[in-house]
Length: 331
Image (cartoon, rainbow, N blue to C red; front, side, top):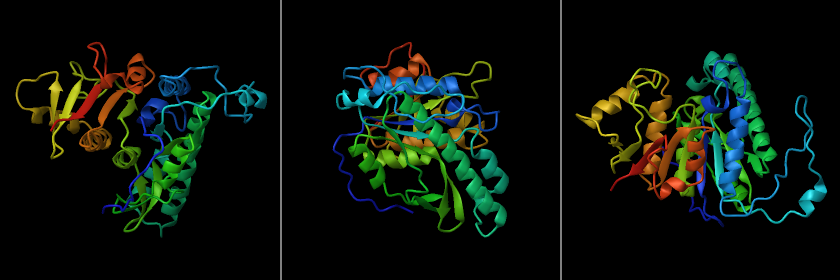
């Protein structure tokens, strides 16, 4: 089912939509544990990329809350009175759940629907508590870097699905936040479904939908590996696919490196190891974005390579020593 959406008119064009992979910002094997070092580095890189082309002054924190284990901010209100207007590039951030939400959703079967069942309804509530708590911590991490971030949950913004496909997704709240100079931070969420009752709306689907309406200059997927490989990266001789081209019909083929034989062999080998649908979904959504003429970069979070991607430098030329995967449309 296609959603109806009026033309989007932004005061400032969106430079980049960033997807923070759940595996990159949380500890996958530790229940509801954030990868603090990665999140801090990612937040710092986002600030640097957003400040590109403008003068960078001292970091003025925007998280003024006092929490156990976190040092109290030293920023005073007077410091902001002397601060010049923010000159950030326009970014949108979307993050996955990682070790948050998945346990609750899988144990209760929220993704399958059935809100009339007490377990599913309880799981829906528990899942949203978990993913929104992660969302708050990410917003706080960005705010501590002086990024004016605001949390926007798809469920609360009225996003819904029909048989797991987006049915309603009004992006006006995102647009209004951008026009006011904020950085919207969305996340994969439990949402209502017209046919199933409820389901899980993934961050990868959200980023594809927003890209089609906001038309960013480029999209970056930050993951826990360097990019897309021809097989699981943990296997011997796994090859990083540096550039993938997408055709008009949505099919894709590997440009770099060159392989003997057909590109279909690579497509199968990439998809076959993905039992959760995560990488299949990521490539599929990335291909849909690339078809719009928007470059997509898949790169390991919190590395020098991710900073290069976030800064938009790959739009001009891809350095030979850059590690990541570029997905582009070829007419």
